[in-house]
Image 1 (cartoon, rainbow, N blue to C red):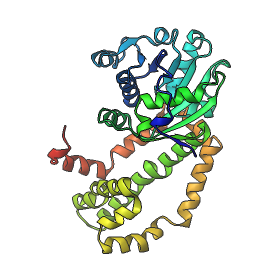
Image 2 (cartoon, rainbow, N blue to C red):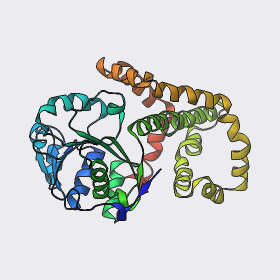
Image 3 (cartoon, one colour):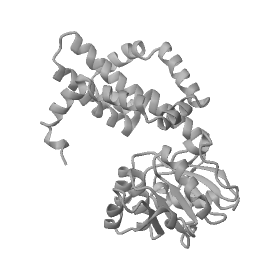
Length: 328
C-alpha cells in the first residue's frame, strides 16, 4: 500500500475546476465546506424544497438544483445515500460534460454495478475514515483524517492527481492518503460494519446486558458495565491500540481479557465471520439490501423497531438524561 502526504499533492490540480457536491449530509457538508475553505470552486446540488437547501445557503455555499449544478462541472462528487445514487446518476448522466470525473466516498454502486458510468468519464474514490462531522472538525483545527483513494477508470491520465487534490482539499493529505481499490474499500467497509463496528459490537453489548439482567442484576448497573464504559475502552484503542488499552486498565481486567475473551469470540465466531465476508464478496448482501429498498424496507423497519424497543435502550435513555455533559 502506498501512503501519500501533503508533499505528494499537486495543490494547483483543481484550481481551475468546477466541483459539484451532490448531497449535504454528514460527508456532503464536510466536503463542500472544506473544499470551499481550501479556495476551490464548489457548487452544491440539492432539491430546492429539500431540508438541506437553506442550511447550505446559510453556510455560504453556492446551491443549485442537481441538474443545474452538474452543468460544466469538472468533478462531480456523489455523496447522497448509496441507494439514492443510481437513480440520481441516471437522471443527470446526459447533463454531465464529456471527460468529467465522478467521485464516490463509498464504492458500493460501482463495485456492484448499480451505476455504470458513461465510458468517457473518469471514476475515482476518496473515502475519509471518519464521520463527516469529524472530517470538518479536524480540518478547522488544521488537522485531517486519513482517506482511502481508488481509481476505477482513468481516461484522462489525471484521475489519481485529481483524487489526491480532492483529498488534500478536504484535509486528508494532512493525515495520509492510502491507496486501495473500489472492491477492497467496499468489501472491507461492509464487513467491518456488519461483523465488528456495528453488528458485532451492538450484539455483544446487548447480549452482555441481557445476561446480567437475567441473572438478577440491576439494569442500570448492567448498562454502565456493558454500554456506557465502552467509550473509555474504545478511546484507548483508537489512540494507541490494544497495547495502550492494557496500559490503562487493571491487571485483573487484562487477565480477564486474555483468558475469557477467546471464549466469547472463538473459532466458531470466526467461521461465522467468514460466512458474512463471503456474502459480501459474492453479492448476497448487496442483492438483499437492494431488493429490501425496492420493496419498501419492511424488514428493515421491523428490525429497527425491535432494536429500539429493547430494554437497554430504554434504560440508557433514562440514564443519559441525567448526564449533563452529554447534552449540547
